[in-house]
Image (cartoon, rainbow, N blue to C red; front, side, top):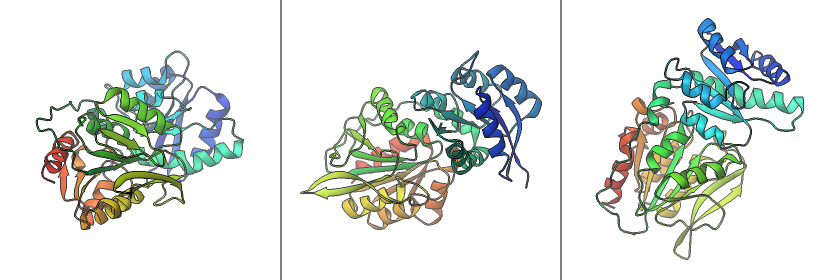
Amino acid sequence: MRQIKVLVVEDSMVFREILVQNLNKDAEIQVVAVAKDPFEARDAILKYRPDVMTLDVELPRMSGIEFLRKLMPQYPIPVVVISALSDKVFEALNAGAVDFVAKPVNATRQQIEDFINNELCVKVKIAAAAKISNVRKMGMVQTQHQPMPLKDNGLIVAIGASTGGTEAIFSVVKNFGPDIPGVVIVQHMPPGFTEMYAKRLDNQCRVRVKEACTGDRVLPGQVLIAPGGDKHMRLVKVNGVYQVECRPGPKVNGHCPSVDELFYSVANAAGARALGIILTGMGGDGAKGLLAMRKAGAETIGQDESTCVVYGMPKVAYDIGAVKYQARLEDIAKKAYSLLSKM
């Protein structure tokens, strides 16, 4: 098996050395070059042609985000951003990064090594398999006019995504209007970042968006995003009213929150009064839950291979019969409105 050639871009010499040492411990990864700023990184890309680049957001001489914006049109390369808790990471994703990891803060060397071995190595391997052309296309998805206002008839929309999902979700949600039924979303993301992501969507979309808390009602024109961390978000019906519960639990399919946990709960609580959407992402989280939704009578949509950054979760869902309709990313919101108007 050919090793994944990695370029590490990090200005801290100590952290850079730890990154290199531990990435190289993985038999599938080879660090071919390091750079402490974007100018060294550009030269290394031309010389070594890496498969994946890890990139710190805060760099000398030029920010990582500005570097991405200049780099991607000329030399598209899968990038995994290493970021402290900051909404700048979403600018990096918008600029073309495939994914990100949360940079350890005040951590011991052992904790940093565990982070690299358990998180960063996985993200690097996923990025190497990503369709980088689709990362760049997602920002071009246009807002569409929805001609048919929907009635408030107690429906639920549930969405799940992983790698590439932050921009894919934005591409869908920006086409939702205040008439959309209550929306619940699980996007695999580290703790802390989900609140910033929700605020970012809230500022840029026509619907209200917030990070979910236990007891939040699921209301038309509102999107609830599961908090990252150690809690699963589930839909429940209390006295005839849909609410969410966010409670601690073990990882499911390697994730907490898990898309499967959300989709199973929607199947149980809403049955045929729901629409499930599964978007880009590695692995199979959400596939079985979406199948449960379809068996309960819900409509289901899967993002098609041609527009996914990683055609993993939607493929598994499609292969087991969970996806009733496949759609290109730019058509998913329109398809959702069409289906919801007939329910």
